[in-house]
Every structure is written in C-alpha cells, then in structure tokens.
Amino acid sequence: MRRRSHAEEHENHERWLVSYADFITLLFAFFVVMYSLSSVNEGKYRILSDSLVAAFRNVNVNSQGQEAMAGALAPAAAPVLPQARPRPVEPPANAREEARKQKTREQMRDMAREILRALNPLVREGKVAVSEGLKGVTVEINASVLFPLGEAKLQPAAEKVLRAVAEVIAAAEFPVIVEGHTDPTPIATAQFPSNWELSGARASSVVRLFIDAGVAAGRLTATGYGEQRPVASNNTAEGRARNRRVAILIEAQNPDTVKELDLSKAE
Image (cartoon, rainbow, N blue to C red; front, side):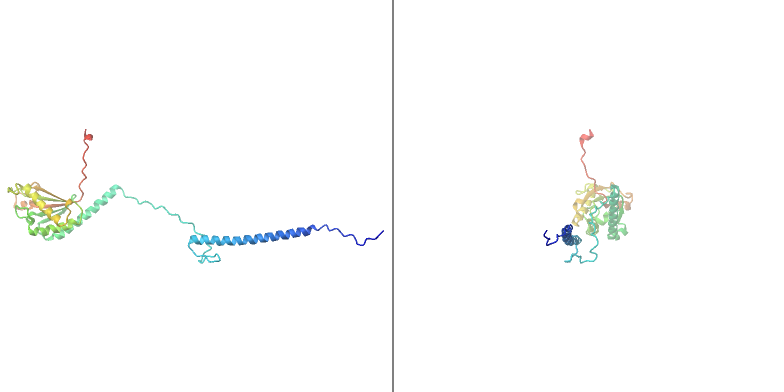
C-alpha cells in the first residue's frame, strides 16, 4: 500500500468567525458613518434653530451659529399677546349734567367779574348793578347813562359803556336778552305812542350796538316791558329813576327745543 504524500488536512470548523468578524466590522463602520452623519445634521439643526431664535429676538448671529449678544443661550421669550384695553367708564347722565352746570356757573361768575371790573366807576355811582341768579347774569344800566329823557337814541358816552359789556359777551356763546324798562310817566309822541314802544326801541338800540361790537345776532333778543316790571316804588323820583333802565340778561341755559304737539294724541 502506497504511503500518502501529504497528511490529511485538519478541517477548520471556526471559519465562520472570520465572516462574522468582517460583518461586525462592517456593521461598526456603518454605525460610525451614521453617527457622524447624525452629528453633522444636529449641528446644522442647531445653527438653523439659533438663527430662527435670533431673527425673532432681533439679534445678530455669527457664522458659527452663536449669538453675538450675551445671553444667547437663554430661551426665547414667549410672544406678548396684545391686551384688550378697558373701555373708559362714562359717568352717569346725572353726573355729566351736574358737571355741565358747574362749568356754566364758573363761566357765568367769570363774566360777571369781568363786567364789574369794566364798569367799576358806574357800579360805585349806583348807575350799574350786576347780579347772578339761576337764570344767569343780569346787568342793569340806568337809562340816564344811555339815553336822553324820552328818547331811544344812544348818547355818545353810552357806547363806551355798552362796548365794554359787548366785549365780554362776545367771547361766550350764551343767549342774551336785552330788556327795556320805563317808569309809568305817560308818553305820547309820533315816534313813541306809549312806553311800550319807547322801551322796545331802547332795547333795539342796545342790540344794534352789540351786533356792531361783534356779538352774534342769533344770540340776541330785544324786548320792551314798558312800566310793567318795576324794581322800585314809583312814588318817589329816586324809585322812578331806578325803574328807567336797560337790563341785559345773559342766560345760563340755552332755550328749550320747540317740539310741535301731535294733535292725534290729544284726542
């Protein structure tokens, strides 16, 4: 029997370990590559995130994705939502009305003081009286200061007095009523058949001067009462002299709005 030239090779039952080792090596390399890729993406994400935060916070970001201002790593503040402004609380109607009345009283008091200062010499002589009441301010001027006896044409000296009053009245917006008053002494002339015409003509003369001095005509009213509303006794000369006067009423309230009545509702 011929002798074998080579001994039989020993069969290696652990060759699979080589393939397994290669597989593990490839798998490790795969995870390394994946990890490196994920790290790059995370960095890009961080740069993108920081850029968005900086844009909303109005700050600059450098090329490395870091904020140029201190405190860049602080979390972005929550957006401030607009808050609804509370509506102003309106005062009740009675409070508004009381405030309006108080303002009117102050304006009236100021006007009365200005007229008193302007006519101070005549007030001291008793020729002019200024009073304040619920209806407003009343300025009473003795007729002897304004007109000759029995006439309705203003004296030259009277214009200076009336223009001083008109200057105060023109600056306001209150209605003004000019009243003419006489004493009971009868008058019967071609121009003035009675004291009614004389008192009305005197009031109209004052109104015309007020208009020339700048008072709006729509605010003015002229009326004559004759001897029907005396303020003193007509039994004495002094009393009759007081009753011959022109009263200028500056009304505190505007005239009421006239509303026509519905006849069907009265039936």
